[in-house]
Image: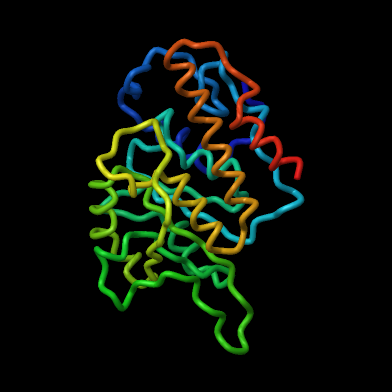
Length: 250
């Protein structure tokens, strides 16, 4: 079990559970005991593999705007982002209200927020495919990637019904790869999970080490999650583990 301090997604999950009228039943494993640090069965706990990147601090930040039950899902990958990227914030989304701390974050002058969303659904004048250049004679702002952590239908609803996001440039990622995520079904190979999107953003921000670490961490999580689901013993020395350990030592 984890003895690590809770991060933003963990705190949001605790808050969401506190106001639940009934327990959340995870699909396909509602009765499974889970580690509070990694949400895996204790027999497959991966808290000891949680990355720490003091040699490669990330200049980018991530702001997760999460649909109602996303923080409760054991398979949610926003949790992995908060494990890797120190400046990760997480807020619950509601159509009728907005967390004032979210508005404060988006207005913080140290950040340049980008709403990450497919450009095909957005007015062309809002779309960017690269990070904005710094304004002349002004201190460079750190990129803050705002990710809508939800199913695709929920994400489209969140995009349409969040007027406080309308002023943000929309970053449309031009990925040259297909999703490797295996914990949910999708009809399209270009529908990435939230953790994969964050890795693409970090790469675009010129932070390949953080991007590769997040990708490897997702692979380890996916492998262990599926092993636990299939009641297979935890495997601790496969290619995913070796890649993650190599990145953490590099």
